[in-house]
Length: 194
Image (tube, rainbow, N blue to C red; front, side, top):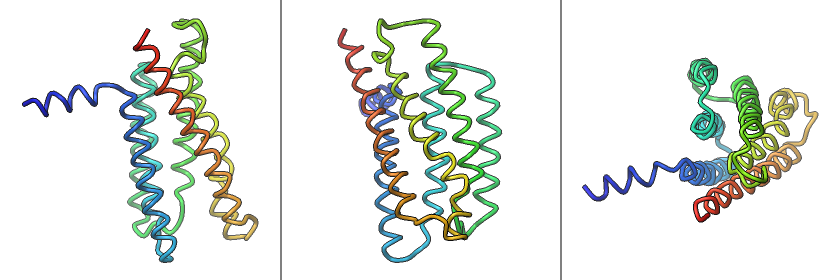
C-alpha cells in the first residue's frame, strides 16, 4: 500500500518524467554502442527511442498547454510511427519520415508553449520558467538535427557525409538538449522552494 502511494506521488511530477527520459536515453545509447561495436543493426533501438522521446516530450508540453490540436496530431503521429516501425521489420536505417514529423510537431508545440508563457507571463523572467528550458532544448536539438536526419540515409548512400561528423553534431546538440532539460528541472526545483 505504501509503495503504491509512493509510486503514484513520485510519477506525479512531470519533471520526474524528464529524468526517466534521460535514463532511457543513456540506456539506449549504451545498447547502440554495444551493437555498433559488434557490427550489429542498432536501428530498431534508435527508431523506437525517437517515438518514445516524442511521446515523453509531448506529455511535458501537454501538461502545461492543453491543446486539442496537439492530441489529434499525436494520434496521427502515433499511427504514422507505428506504420513505419512495423513496415520495416528489420529496421535497415533510420525512419527519417517519422523523425521529421515528430520533430516538426514538437517544434510547433514548443512555439505554442513559448507563446503561452509570453502571453501569461507567470514569472518575472522568462528563463525562470521550466517549460522555457524544455522548449529551448527542443529547439536546439530538433531544429539542429532536422536536415541531417531528413537526409541521413541519402548522405550515407551517396557517401556525402562521414558518419562521425554527423554523429558529432548530433551528440553536441544532444548534450545541449540535456543541459536545457537539467535547467528545467533546476528551475522547477527553485520555483517549489519559493
